[in-house]
Image 1 (cartoon, protein in one colour):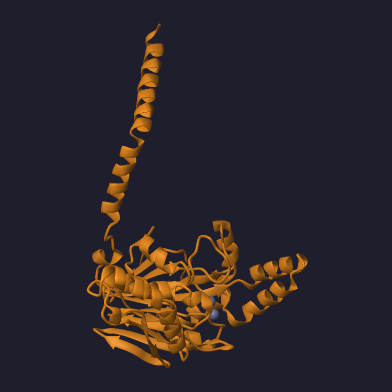
Image 2: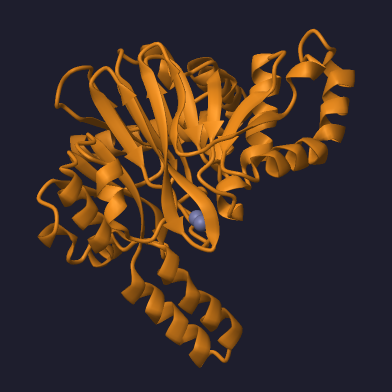
Length: 354
Ligand SMILES: [Zn+2]
Ligand SMILES: [Zn+2]
């Protein structure tokens, strides 16, 4: 046997042994991997390493239309170390766990309006924040008129779970007084101000949903504007004036039109009619780019993406025409994207958390 053959046989024997050992010790290897992953991820929080500044995390960039790659609409704004959540769509809380944003750290929630896709993760958010943080006061939830019904309704829906957890873990760990949400009805203007952080609500056009709000966050010379759901209006550029980042919802009417045609061709005129109604109270990617231009925004980020974009090729179709309106960077948001604004500067840093 020549040397080459001997070497091949030798390595084949080694590989066979390694494979056999990995099969025999499968459970032990699995246990080691699990323990290592737990110790690495336990208590893993984006907040602990953040420098001072204004930071935005896209938690969920989806919409009511099914998109397996996107949670429902939810955006985190971190000013200094304080964590605010704007809307809490379905799946957003699980996404927070995945990207290392602990619900226990949430200071307050701001709701833009009460379409179900913006609140169907809110009950879970309130529960996780309470159970994880051991708060003795409920979570403050700012929102337009109607916020009391939403908060009290969810409090009622989760009341039995509250009782189970108090009975199971004890009042010292989960104080009953801290359960649920405390609604705060807002009007347009400054809705919260402290430690150099200013949160401003402005009315948007999402008729027949009225009032519906967008939010502007200001901190140490930097600003972020979140439109919420809105049709195009000239007012948007005024509210987003000189914002470092404009986070705009966006719906591409041509792509939605194709879905409508397909629904009608499949004989489902009811769904066709509903889909036909959707575009009139949303803004298009091109219109949002015009707002970003008129506002002199630093960066435009799309969220609440309609329709679903399962492939990067579709992103190009989605944004078609937008670059003609806005010369700054345009980003199709994905869950886990983070943007950081250093105080008193013009820099925008980008990261992808998970
Ligand atoms: Zn809406
Ligand atoms: Zn929506």
